[in-house]
Image (cartoon, rainbow, N blue to C red; front, side, top):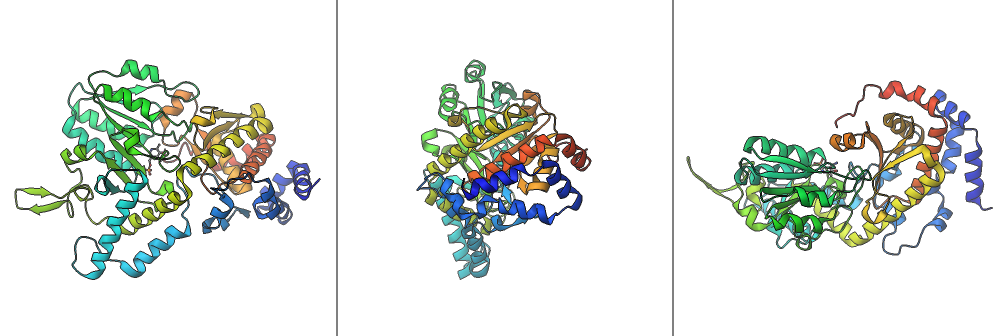
Length: 483
Ligand code: PMP
């Protein structure tokens, strides 16, 4: 028996009631924390011998770039499993932002002075980096905006209001995030277009045959997520594009979850628009990208207009600016864009294939450990096949409210997950559930964190009534905060 086994056995044999009662009653029980700190496996160098060989992506090395991972939460070392909501930022991204404000801060495209010229160049180069990241044809097809929601609103209004009319059809999916549903629904209301949905199987897989039957000559738009933020399903982009293009519908890919976690190639995909968020791929909050086919972007009416969107304005006329500026109204998030480019460079260095491989391994490992250790106590949603599942595991513990589980994971174990309906209410209604606990991974997550999650869930599940009694009052009434 090695040191790890000794510690593990010791910890798992400590009477559970004692642990929880001590923790809850005394908030920070010194004894409890000493034990848990000792089994905080990430702190134990020899635990690395359990690590699988992965020469190309070493999460232990990567972790060193993320200062926030050193943080303690509720007396425990932070285990951050809420990456589908937002990811942490490596010091390279943080430093790029600091450097911008320290050395180059000025408004872009407005000054002939040196700082403004330098800032403009840095910001334009950032577009170039993002264009390479998604294999766009050219940097000026890349529009920087606030986030995926913003990007989809731009397409829905700028393309939709010009091109849709009564009787046209927009096809969405039951698994869509509200950000890919509501803009299209609003535009449909204005234009008289009709919304149709592609359903999913009980395992969270799109019903492609149903899609083939539902699409008609009147379908003008097909919009769907590259990866579901709840059930984790990786959708078959090329299959959807082929079906949609047969009737000349445009394809809008919500890449909020797919771009940060899987390789993206807009040319190979054959899509018409792509929306994604910078903050979900190591970049700053308030950054996002809309990519579009040049011919479509050029014929689109600018949606938000004002400074920087024009070449000339007279009292009654306007000449719109070139791409992408005509869609980037007002002073943009310059530092954010530069930070986002740094994030894209960081991911490119690791390789998006490796990111996907790493997360697939974590998902496989989680599903296996859940089955072995929790059995029927845990209900997992989404496909069982890791080939079509990204690093997202939505689940429930039998007979325990998702918010209670989330609160207990945070308070007792320092594990950050998201709970609720994850801005995808229709998907939850389709699955017949009120909400889920969602663990979502990224490049810095390691197997040991999953072990800690599994151990924590075992304790929570064994202490169900007790846990409910303690935490229900904290979460009662929090029916799905913010979505
Ligand atoms: N689509 C999907 C699939 C998402 O997961 C999210 C974020 N959870 C969004 C859209 C919206 O992203 P943002 O909040 O960055 O606009």
